[in-house]
Image (tube, rainbow, N blue to C red; front, side, top):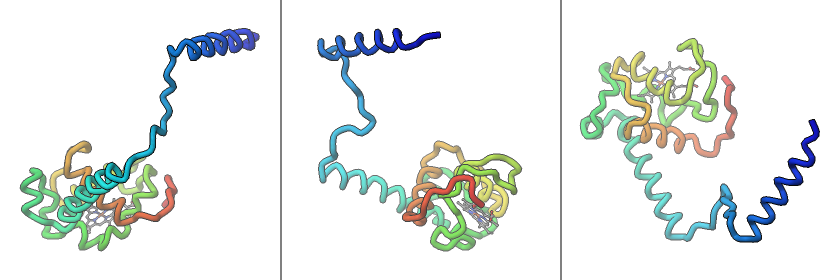
Length: 150
Ligand code: HEC
């Protein structure tokens, strides 16, 4: 099949529409952010890191507020993963041997909650999950993405 005539016709329609102002191109990268916006984004991120830090260290008040029970053994995440060590967020998604399946970071956070911690698995979209994820990524900032690695 010859597709060139279709491409040419398509380009002509696009050019006409653009000339008539009918098409607005939505670029993935919009306008630059202001300094105030950047500060607000950073503050929102660091607030999640702060909450995740508390959860990672087993703070009972924060668990209660968010309605989660991350450990029944008296062991908090930070006792086995000080400063987020050995959590390897940059390796996900990857084949996870312990689970025998292809897993995301959130799957593995839940694996640790259920297995070593004997806690209650949390919702993948919950506030607690987002905060734990923020803390783990923040602790490993500067690492290069290397999905699939072990
Ligand atoms: C009793 C020790 C222990 C505690 C407590 C613990 N973990 Fe783990 N964690 C492990 C072990 C063991 C592994 C598997 C290590 C591996 O895969 O190399 C692991 C692996 C992980 C991984 C995946 C690392 C990888 O590359 O596969 C993440 C993410 C993780 N833990 C997060 C958490 C979080 C979040 C908590 C708290 C809710 C937690 N862990 C509590 C022992 C623990």
